[in-house]
View (cartoon, rainbow, N blue to C red):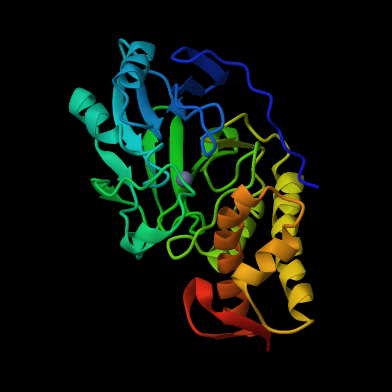
Amino acid sequence: MIPYVKEIKFEYGACDQVSPRIRRVIADNPGPFTYTGTGTYIVGQGEVAVIDPGPDDPAHLQAILAAIPNERVSAIVITHHHADHSPLAGPLKAATGAPVYGCPVTRHVAEEAGAPRMEAGHDLAFQPDVNLCAGGTIAGPGWTLEAIPTPGHTSNHLCYALAQENACFTGDHIMGWSTTVITPPDGDMTDYLASLEAIRARGFATLWPTHGPPIREPDAFIRAYAEHRQERIDQILGALESGPAKISELVPRLYADVDSKLWPAASRSMLAAMIHLVRKGQLTAQGAGPDATFRLA
Ligand SMILES: [Zn+2]
């Protein structure tokens, strides 16, 4: 069982001091992928970094600027290029002159055109000024942010460690309110499981997801989060013991108790698991993509 944390007190557009060095302003974009909305973090005092400015919403831009009337933004920091995270980077840069840090969009994103809508959408215009795909640090007075490559949810996802608080901004990689969507080809289950362990192994005291409240017991949370993925993977292996099958046959069997409206989403995450298992040599695929027939190796 994942020990979800969902309780969050806030008002849209208000700025809350949530730790000694962290303030948060939540955008008014609640929804099935964003929970109560995008939580934009302001790190430092006087000279600040803004993490995940959010959707291109003028009211949210005003709320961020109103939170820091006499302060300077020295860095705009992006976890990944989804439409609820990065689009406001451009307008915020225009307003402040601060450079944008992140990892550019790379892998296969265009191929997802026909796939069922599982995310807030891609911000294909996203282009950082400073490329942190391989990691790197950003510093200001009293704060240091270290980019940690965490591919999985997207191929360009970065988490950011705040050294002074042994904390980590986890974007959509690890969220307290929900599991994260892994949809191929930009999403990758093999990468995702490795990225979960990479964050767990760091021993952070607190995780700050872009959506929802902080996670105060990261080690236990991430272990449960990873176990949940492994259970889903084991279910697939168990189902294939009775013979080869396509995803379209397995989903109604394994998700019989789930609303069939969720089956397209379940099919995408099952595909991510299948690709992972083929790569590990546990399955073979006849055919390609979502219509392939899978069998135990
Ligand atoms: Zn996302």
